[in-house]
Image 1: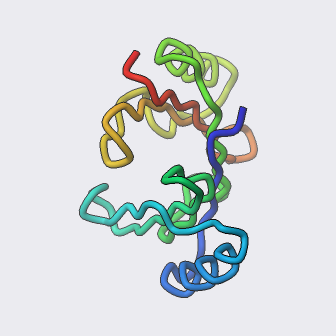
Image 2: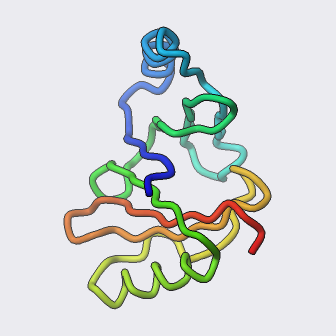
Length: 129
């Protein structure tokens, strides 16, 4: 059900160092970083996880909504599209239309909705379909 989650931090470098040390004892490491050059913003993001799969993300910058982010697994791209459509129809606010986000990986297809409380809810499909 949950693919990954994340939240904003006030000092990316300090938080990155903290989580590297704290999560390291659990066998969790920094497996991916997304730089400002990759996204065209001024934000840094770090994904922590195991076996190359980031499950916990931290990032700096101005948060969308309230700064809480949860990504849910979609079985296919059609479900991502349907999620986005249903979210808008239910009164959610668009926070990213369905599409490929190649800065994560070549098949990362996702859509983002801000729920009534400002939580950034994402549906993501990792397959090419």
